[in-house]
Length: 208
Image 1 (cartoon, rainbow, N blue to C red):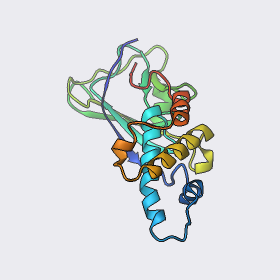
Image 2: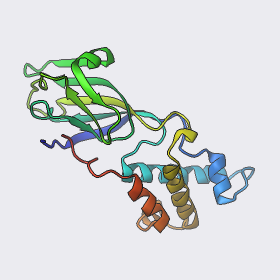
Image 3: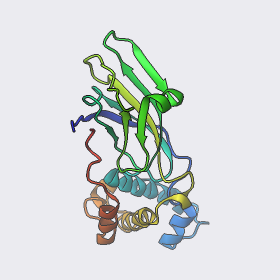
């Protein structure tokens, strides 16, 4: 299987909620929600904790729409691995053809043109049986794939191991709040490390 590295990766539509509510975060830290300063301060640590867990595991906790850009499709009919789990749907595929024109396939076209591996980790996209990937112009970002990923739209939908990892890192950041977030994240609690290792899958940095 050929490997293609991503040119870029971005969130198109961010989650509408966090993996923990601010009330859950404050309860975990045993802080008073009526304190006018604490909710605002804790919100920043919560965002950092969620971001850390997501980046380390390549799991989108609450559902979001992401897009990756690549320089080319894989060879032949090899699957293209999508680097964020759990995969919910592939929503759009764009590529620049050899004439320099952008071709777009939406969810209707995708159903008849591609196979989608929703239940594998990482999820994947591949041409339907008997076909191959379209030829692209040799240029950066010749291919873009937009997809929806995440456990669900509510914090309660998120895998509990991921939520616990967020709680542990949140507590660590709050306890070490005299340090910068970057400094505090250099060493995280062993329990969080083990949960992250459990959630991480090995091939998230590769594209097939």
